[in-house]
Length: 150
Image (cartoon, rainbow, N blue to C red; front, side):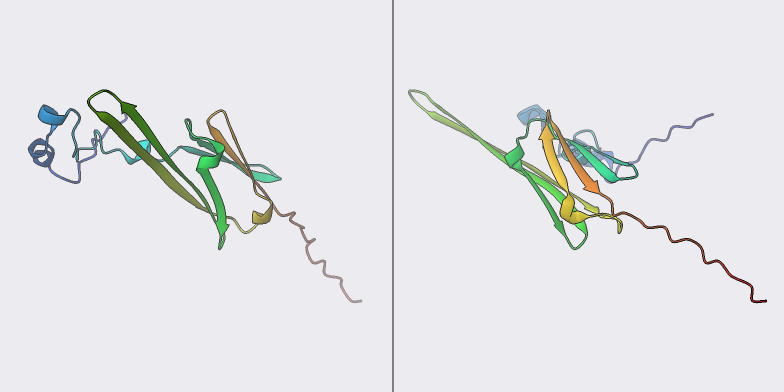
């Protein structure tokens, strides 16, 4: 039998009720119950796979362009980040409307010792960032064979 547990909130329910701004502004500005305060929506999902020759990282990041990404390796850590800024401007007879939108994320991964960070390849296509991280060739040493002296 499976038991489902409800995760308790960090803050009591009354804080969200007290700070409920839906009556005035639409969606809540402050939501501590977890309904709208979801960090998973702000950080792209990642799949990491491994085979004999390489590691592959697939990051779902739709709506971005190649120029929006920054991929760096420093001290054995792969950092993938993005920042996007949008501005729209509408001029009418009596007013000018300007809206700004900023979004960004950063994900970091510690690289394994058997990786080749100098040969990382990154490609963005159809909303997916594909990163290929080749592995070093591992030479397997044969076990030591003891020879009896007669």
